Length: 172
Image (cartoon, rainbow, N blue to C red; front, top):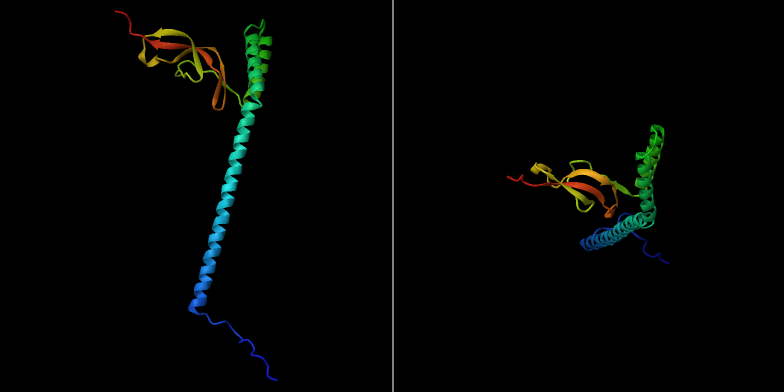
């Protein structure tokens, strides 16, 4: 009996047809991997966006009541500090007010307390009164703060009440 033809030892000869087929197969695999990576990147981006949106909703929704209550408590504490009968009481109320403000900021609240000379911003401020100024550079700037306001990212909860300067030409 004769033995069947044994496979030839050594490398398989590369023909142009085999080379083209191998090249096409590699390109197809690269395309498949590119699609998989693109889908994974889109999924990761969507999950990150969902997490950011959820965190923003939680900050604005769940803590809004707490932030509003802390802001009211801060106002009461500042009022107590301003009417304290002794320096010791005033210091104690100021310390409590500082702690309340830190809590408020930690929960996403922003105390709006514009300083004198700041530009009037109708989105975060309300004009409680208007005073005349002869200086045109001071037009629509804050003269004094009547009551601080409260904001959370992207939203004004209570505008700061301020006295606004308005330029008027002096009467001749």
